[in-house]
Image: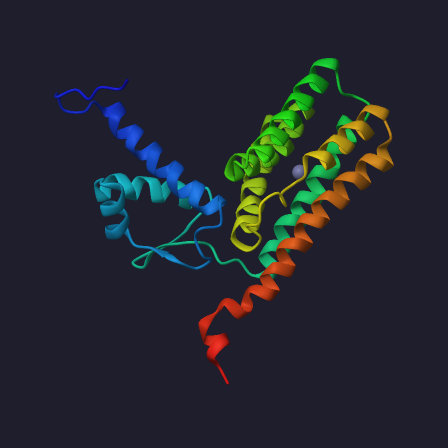
Length: 235
Ligand SMILES: [Zn+2]
């Protein structure tokens, strides 16, 4: 059981507070509980988390750096509200980069790689079964980062992680329904094609997988336009 010391909190406690707030806001974003364009008011959040505005500002800065929030000078922090073109651009980048990763990995997975990937897919399925949405989204995205890692490019890994984080967020903002993230079965099909050394099947599996995610988000973006009260009440 955790006990609280009476002495002033050491620096690590402050870090813990920031980590906790960071995790709360990230979870809310990935579960689609924050609307695109919504403002996160510093004063309200500091009260909600019972923390200093300084601690909150650090967390908002980190989320802004990661692209999970948009920070506007003198205006504050906002949930991103990307345009359809923004979304398509990020998926296009993923298509190009991940086709390269598939090409490098095709027929080249070691037995250790295979074990790691299969264990990862098993944990994706487990999270889905247990209804842990944000964990499932995180694991599904991480599958793609893991492929990049296995492909052996540390440089690319950070870039793919950023692209994946953006698409995870787009999905959460516009298509927050459960179980419609990257599917573990599609990941398993991709691994099977890589294992068979069938490059055209592996490329097509990745292309179709990313295209399906993109279309679902874009379709939902188009239909969610009516969520705008001004559009609802106009005429
Ligand atoms: Zn996926």
